[in-house]
Length: 224
Image 1 (tube, rainbow, N blue to C red):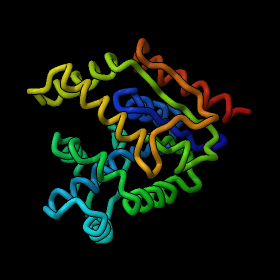
Image 2 (cartoon, helix red, strand yellow):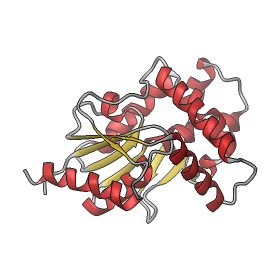
Image 3 (cartoon, helix red, strand yellow):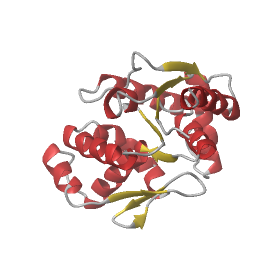
Image 4 (cartoon, helix red, strand yellow):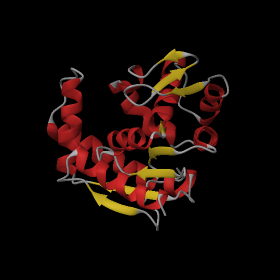
């Protein structure tokens, strides 16, 4: 079977990660959650308790090792050989990951690692700049969107499943909109739809429906 790179981009709560995991499993491809990589950098910075400056971030990047391993849930993220898959989903990491991921040096380091991980393999990669920056020549580019209401509801459900309380629907919606604004206006690799990406609105789709759409699009390319 022909192997291709599938780039899935979109804002928070659009279903990127969940869809990417399912498509990768169906195709027997590797799955790479690029957001987890930036979260791992953010966690490393938080643990160092240093100022949020370009100089300090460079020091952090130069002294850490991030690795990704396949798992039943899609991916295990390791920071210096420690499984941080749960730790990187904390509210504290959520608060700072946008600022950390906007740093030029951090971005360049992670993009280089992402390209290395996917080299020569069938791969499904999700993020915010995969089709525009990381793999502009990806065989299939998908851009997922959804209404703010749908995205906030999904995030609220995710938090509930993890036992995270204290955040209401309106607060989560505000956080998502702020993340959208920040990611879309950052200087380095802003969130945007690639010109040749296929846009899918997931507001009224189940996870199975949206992942099946992407899977079928991939098969059309792989089999032709």
